[in-house]
Figure 1: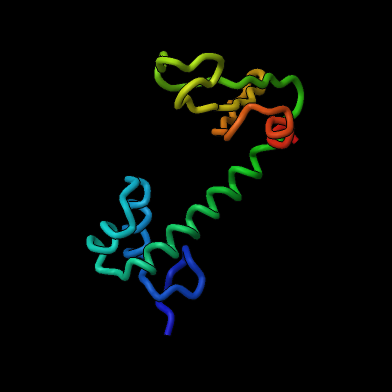
Figure 2: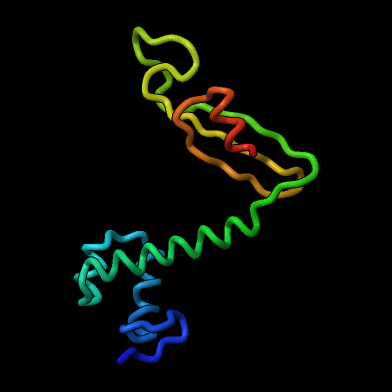
Length: 124
């Protein structure tokens, strides 16, 4: 029989335990550590963490549509210089692509390369 839980339908864990899971999720702890702290199975913790991540993604997508004037740019983050490597993105630099809505928020994403096709896919 399912325990009463207003946060998750047909849940077998209590609201108190779910709130504890959510708190530990926000602290960015590993599933194994959370499982030890909450006395739940690691697979159960992973399943709930995945559902939390999906819900966060859904909420982000609802806010995501950009309209009006936007600016886009890519930046390279990493070591200043690697000997023998030249050019943009040389060495082990990470490429970050950002979209900025004027008087709004910034959406960023780490991209594997700065090719036209990759960046156009993100913009669309």
